[in-house]
Length: 397
Ligand SMILES: [Zn+2]
Ligand SMILES: [Zn+2]
Image (cartoon, rainbow, N blue to C red; front, side, top):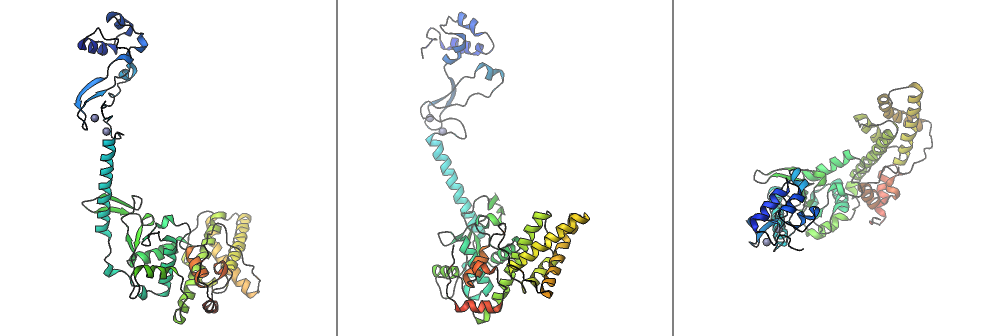
């Protein structure tokens, strides 16, 4: 750009610029004898010398001049910049010096965070649970959990919230199994856990908030005979129950079946009536039903009973809460009638809103070799015994 101020000294230029914001440009052009149109006068102003050196290269910093309207709206002065290294006085300066500086700070923070987590959350290997001391059910819970959650490094487990397949059929059961793992020192917070899993409030005071479902864990377990890698491979393979463990395997199967039923029961209530609750009676009724029917048949019972309750509600104008409260009693009496009258109850298929859980895949398919995860089979010792004579520990994934 042509220097239109060649005939003026420094003070005159400063005077012109200061007056530009309050006086008419046309008058100033005449007074200072400038060859420029009023609208482009501002473009020719030299940048302002800030009077401070650049922190990186010591060159003097400059800033651009405000426009007339920015001045009128009392805008902040423009950010100072270095004409040599392109540093800008801003938190997000993109110059290489600042990028590097921020990178170092982030690395330092990561290091502090990792040290903090290690100091506060490391579990002493002396206190690791011993694999051989676990009950049959505990081994299965652990196996299913790491089957879905284990990361490629064979040490860390991804947050429960990131599981693609849900861990157990219902949230209540998930809480039970997950607390078991936590309370028995299986899970140590990984130093890779991000802010979603662990928010550090005060490094010095060791104050933080742990969000368990979003936390990444290291698996803590040891064996009397196997090295860690071998042990983890061993846990990943679903194991068949021994003679002594048959009863426990049956109890586990029934527990999963009960929760498969509750899962569908909730889905049904939510579809037809709104909010669902689980009471003592719900657990008792389903615990009883899984001894007599397969989960698929109980789905049929839930479906038929809820149809009946919905019709009754519409006909009598019964309030929603009473309809919901009466459902579990209806399910119970429907089942009793079915037994007395020897109804043939066609088993239903899995509902699309009741995704098969990893516990069910791992245990019912992996251990018991039951197709459709035992959906159409009444839990029984005979079936478990049968499965022991078959071989096929593989899970289709
Ligand atoms: Zn600089
Ligand atoms: Zn910079």
